[in-house]
Amino acid sequence: MADMADDRPRTWITLETELLGRYPIFELRRSRQRSPGSGREHSFLRLDCPDWVNVIALTDEGSLVLIEQYRHGTDEITLEIPGGAVDPDESPSSSALRELEEETGYVAAELVEIGRVDPNPAFQSNRCWTFLALGCRPDGEIRPDPSEEIAVRLAPLADFGRLIDDGAITHSLVVCAFDHLQRGIDRGAIWAARLPS
Image 1 (cartoon, rainbow, N blue to C red):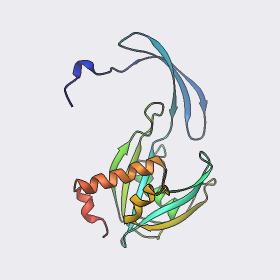
Image 2: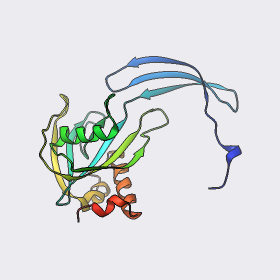
Image 3: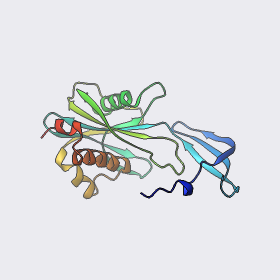
């Protein structure tokens, strides 16, 4: 990419912020901000959500640990990888291990961070980490949240891309997780050599 240092956007100036609502999974804020270039003022809405984690969990036999659950946003049953919110007192890696066990009963022998995305930087403040969990075994205890009804499914790792292509997996952050996995494999990441064959 050509050097465009003089053309780069600058951070807008926050003039005021107002909390509009506090909900179990986010806080809604309105801010008034000024453009450092034009000087114009605009109002923006922002969702302050907790950070999230996704876990690509693999058994030694090469099975991908998936979950099926009803999602209220789309009013559909979805096929996903385990994941969830990072609690305030947790690191993303601790959350990944907790979510994996709570949702599936599987525990990992090894956990590797393989990517991070900003789910929607236009109006969300959070980040989503993707972890690769290797050597997973069903030695833990399933403890879903009171509003979760989850079924655990296993599929060959080789089917991950096909499940996306066929529309069985449609969750955008799960598609991002697959991209992190595939890019790591393509570039020969150290962890890629430890993937079950």
